[in-house]
Image (tube, rainbow, N blue to C red; front, side, top):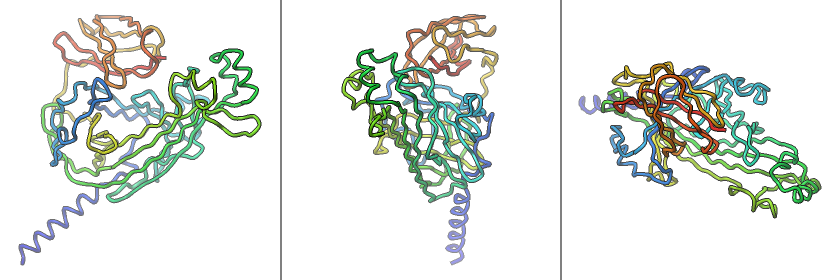
Length: 384
């Protein structure tokens, strides 16, 4: 009987221990936080693998050799005003750039995290679009605890006069178009469904990570995104997708609206400002596309890292300059956001000019390896 009671007490203690894991404001990010990460992916984003080959049932995370590409990335949170000098996203406390080049502007309070704006490359026209949320999306609530659920929806847009299209539409057809429509609207709708559905322990083993066992709270996250370019009818004042307008839809280099759904598990650890591990899945959660985990707590320190490397201009349109006196017979690798290698180049001390005119607009990652094929620097840049 005593043994039974003891086991019950142990079981209750374990449940209480894990149930105390939660996401709070103190656990979340602040301006100037830099969170180093390793992003494991494939050379083509159409590839994927079974989750059991990466994360077995006991959640032991070992060296993920199943992924052919590993990119070093640092998530940096900076003042929102740095990329929003005109104050479009009023109230935003910080911002960060995603892997695909979008800048997300956040308002973080003691109660929650609000997504108040998104900046990205303007489709069809070039330049930067500023999508301000009319219905703010609440991305996180504090505290986030086991069995909590959260559902929210946000809508953002930017409006411009129809004349913005004058340079990209044939003159004869533009006159017909401007007779019917007066405003172009870049429109985004986000739907978020998240729940904290599991807790337990996750173990890191191997040379590339901090060995040890961590208690986690798992967030099951589903995000639906819809993006469209719309025109407003002068007479009905209704917006219609540009893809459905005869003569215009056929000229588009992309199919609109664009729909995307992401499914992921985030493994949060108490006191950490970002998930220890993020696993991105397909719709059935039976196939993994990529994985991201923090490497701030590594079991070794690479003493050969180049700390004083500079890369400019950033963004760049034609030529990228990489400079450091410490570069000696190094090789530069440039990857797209899908992990595909797009360029290689030998570098040496001083200024190295990299011609990037042939690259498509967007975000790119770079890695620098020394003569012994040891990674010594990494980062990202934006091609305009």
